[in-house]
Image (cartoon, rainbow, N blue to C red; front, side, top):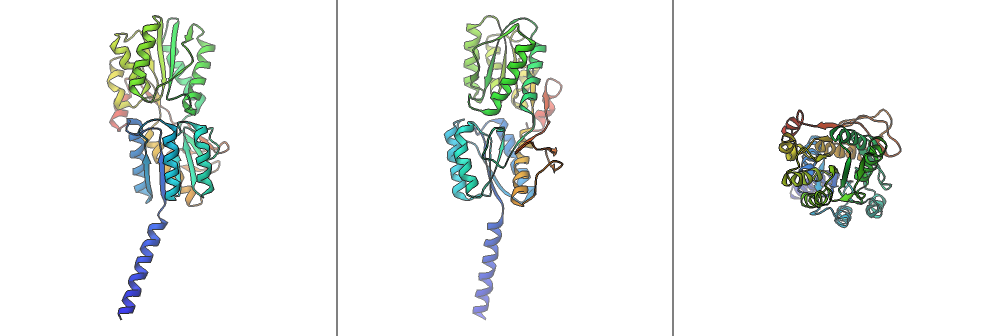
Length: 324
């Protein structure tokens, strides 16, 4: 009888361990931790993981340093997770470690990284060209007089931010030749303080500065603070994507004209949704309906959809109320 009980106990333990081992595990490495945009993304990740019965965690490095993302991915490879997600800071720096992850049998999903090669899928909630041009058009509508403008990006190596900047600059060059770009672009828009200090320097050096177009959620906030400090509200336009809860007050004060964004919580949910589909062996092809994206029409391994939200005085409070 004792032997039978011992055997039954051993079987129960083995089944429990087998169930734990079969639970799908995902690690999603974002650009930087502790900022509202990625806090919202983490909420989406945890919500969808709970719905689908997946073990998922978000890793947010202490700074937007590509080396920290590489280390985080190395750690996830060592943990033998099923899926790695990434929002890249430096595309080229990540290719070798993502190749290593895939060689280990790990599924790799990117967001804001349409140029990455060593991924199973990259998904976007807006096309790079469309997103950049939408901001350029709003910028042009806001700024009536000729003069100078500046462009901020998260860093000079963030692929999608620079693709947005390329599209916006090209559109403005063709449609608003009276607006002249100061320098090329400034890689400060993932940090409020760096964006603020760069904007203060630009304002001091360029009396005819008409606007700052900032791609990176902290860029509009930092540039907006600089405009406030110099009492240039209404004279220097600040546009770009930002977290509504962080920027709502400045929108109502007229410091931030607005911009466009997508829902980072929605992006977090999509990471988990696609990850589970891949581990379950489900195909993603033209006509596949992916919750959070809708019916998709992939281009290679890129899934690009149009899920833009407009940021302005009429929408910002509602979006902030959604926890964004």
